[in-house]
Image (cartoon, rainbow, N blue to C red; front, side):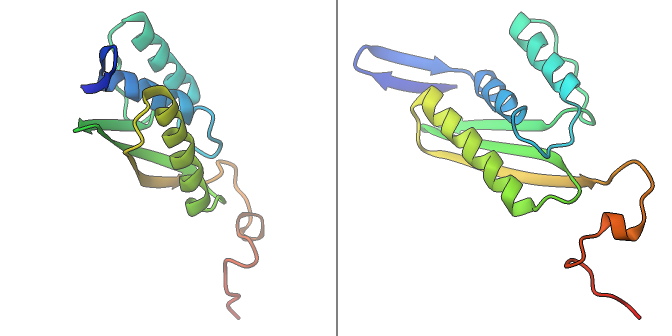
Length: 140
């Protein structure tokens, strides 16, 4: 539990609230492959107080740890093929960090991304369609 001391008293924020903030912001990042309908349903169920249905294959796994006004977030995600991992990681980290800072007022935030896989297109494509010309060396 995160405790923020103000001049009026203390504010306590549960890790589940931080997870919800992270989940909602992940919905806005393009390139994450997870089943967004399932993620939306999971968030809706949490907000409605219903039991959570855990399915690690269809939604990003989010771990939150709070220690001494320090928020540590671990995200386990799968991204789409063809995106630059550093670019999408930068987008995710900045978006979540900015929102957590805005919502909690804590600026000591660490966000670790764990890319668990890359999803390739489902339809059959030729090598020319899949690969960017500057990514592969032509073998003769």
